Image (cartoon, rainbow, N blue to C red; front, side, top):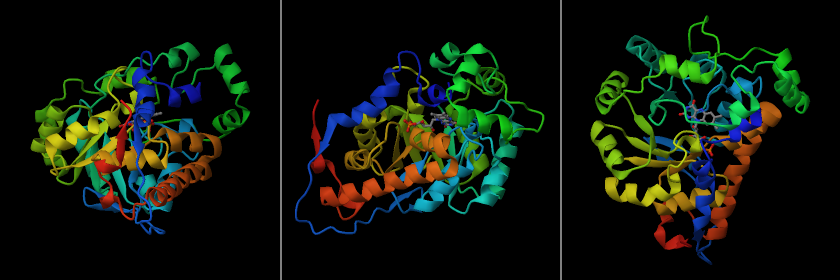
Amino acid sequence: MVFDYIDGGADDEIARFEGQGAFHDYRLAHRVLSGVDKPNMSAKVMGQKLDVPFILSPAAGNRLFHTDGEIGPAKAAEKVGTVYCLSTLSSRSIEEISALTRGPKWFQLYVWKDRVLVKEMLARAKKAGYTALVLTVDFPITGNRERDPRNGFTIPPKLGPKQIWHALNAPLWSLDYVTKSSVKYANLAEDTSAVSLNEFVASQLSADFSWDDAEWLLGEWNGPAMIKGVARSDDAIRAVKTGFNAISLSNHGGRQLGCSPAPIHCVQDVRQAIGSEADLVVDGGVRRGTDVLKAIALGATAVSFARPYLFGLAAFGTAGAVQVVSQIAEAVERDMILAGIGSLGQLDESFIRYLK
Ligand SMILES: Cc1cc2nc3c(=O)[nH]c(=O)nc-3n(C[C@H](O)[C@H](O)[C@H](O)COP(=O)(O)O)c2cc1C
């Protein structure tokens, strides 16, 4: 059930699997004899230098997957020299992650109804050294994820025959879950228990949040900011006008609108629409080094992903997250050599072959 919670998407999971599969619509025409043996993988997003052209997307409640929780991906990002983006709904607090890890960090915000609470969160993130804000806008309500009710899965998990069966099939996870700290949303008040995500979202999130509210929020934050969850050129143009410095082309890993387009398919249109006025991050379905190179060749500044490090975390805690993220960094380097690319600036559409 925990695997399904991470892996699953909304409705018929079309967006979930197309997000990943759409990378197969492109091939990379490699360049030969270009003398590349040590490629430069560095990229810059919102002025933040990255040693690798990817960042780690925010994901809620990592304690559910392993007791290390968000420490795992934060350490993994630090290891490869990139940004870790902490979710509002993290199970380790803004301050704890800041104190325990040294790499650059951004803070992802869902918008609460209570603006005082929003301001408080922003102030805490700023004080703890988070250098950019990521506003997630594709989550006005929770998507229809059918694997979870089918498994009887809730956060925190309930105990019934189905859940016991799942637990028996994953003894190491069960031992970790039962013997270590309990699941909580650490950025909320101590007395806010981790009720089911649906109830939580219904009570706290603000589905009527508008562009005017986004402008208010940017004024409150007064620093670099990325909007996460954009699929259309007109929204991208509006985001730039509103003052966002970066746009994350994302459909929440196919967990929200079940039939939204694959983020990789949106890159060219959006890049054409906004020119060089904002950075573009492709979020969703990135699994291979070649996926990273394809996104950049099509016009992205960098990419991001969540499930790969979440599976690593769930399997082996921090060591697992570090291993997965390091493997993706190694893959990017290997594929740059194989494609004959010395630095990411050399990538353009001449490398792309379309299959559709
Ligand atoms: C288990 C899980 C929890 C997530 N929680 C959040 C979250 O709290 N905030 C957010 O902006 N996105 C969240 N996302 C979406 C990711 O940030 C990201 O957009 C998506 O997972 C990218 O697709 P990929 O996992 O296939 O790489 C979550 C995704 C998963 C799988």
